Length: 159
Image 1 (cartoon, rainbow, N blue to C red):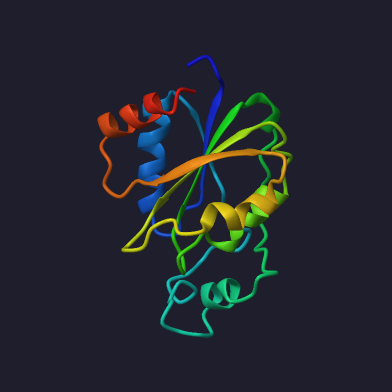
Image 2: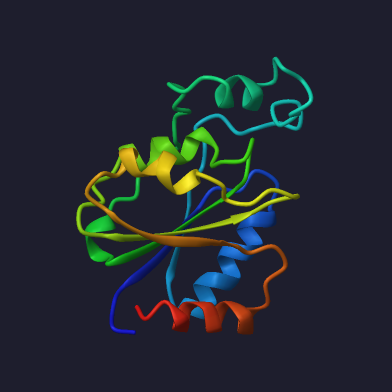
């Protein structure tokens, strides 16, 4: 692998952070955490409450939660693994904020996610308009993946 790789991720509860850390190690990649300007509380993440912050964001297609900081050196990377927990069968809207805040022209984006039960569904097609000049290259759920399984996946991508 001669390409410079970044693992960028958003994690609300720590599960995706753990997967991202293992993936970064397996891919010999740098790691960047996408953080909301206003951190999510347990009440914000209560998907059973129609008025919780996450429910309101996910029900509003124009929602773009502010991020704490931008990635200053995206131009240094060829490949970006982009990770998140699956919310309402797709990526949290903060992922759209992150994509729209950066120029991904010519970059390969490979999605990964953690989920309590659903897959990636139509996530890629929903995120593509946020980074129209990037090349999306599939994705994978990383629930409980071992470092060796992640290494095998990275190798199979022929980066």
